[in-house]
Length: 183
Image (cartoon, rainbow, N blue to C red; front, top):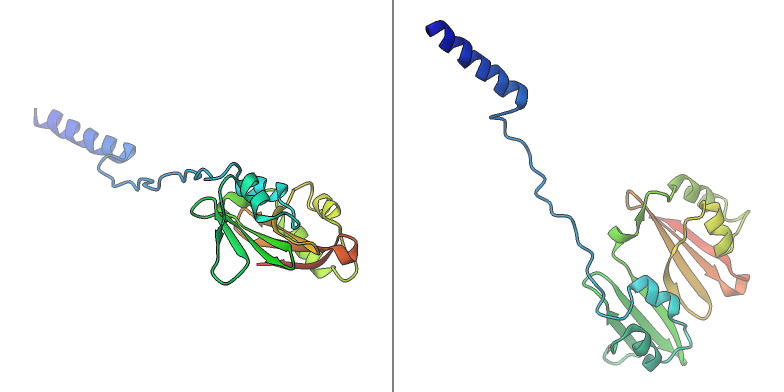
């Protein structure tokens, strides 16, 4: 009887070790992040595609779906779409300079190859690109329109690790990239 009890106890112990019973396992307590819905008619990227520097505040209000908040003593307006995204427009001489703030986590893209971005940065003095040529060089990955004025557009690409490649395309250079950077 003692022998049978010892065998059962030993078997239970071995089974416990093999299956991990009694072992404190780390549980993933982090909840998946749910993307917050925009307060407006469009998400930040969609809104940026529709906005133009020559638009008046009323036209932008109509596109976004609510009135922008005017900053005191300036011709600046802010449309806070979500907690982490917004559009800002600064007017100078009747023209707007439009800036978007994105949630960087939403922009991460495993198709963005940072080695290609470094190649572009290192060779920008010899070879410049239009936006379309840049997308082709980046193997078809579209950028995120971050800034838009009557003289330039700035796009960004974010790789899976959060490194950001930015390129500014200038109207004075016939739409070619004038500034590129990696952060």
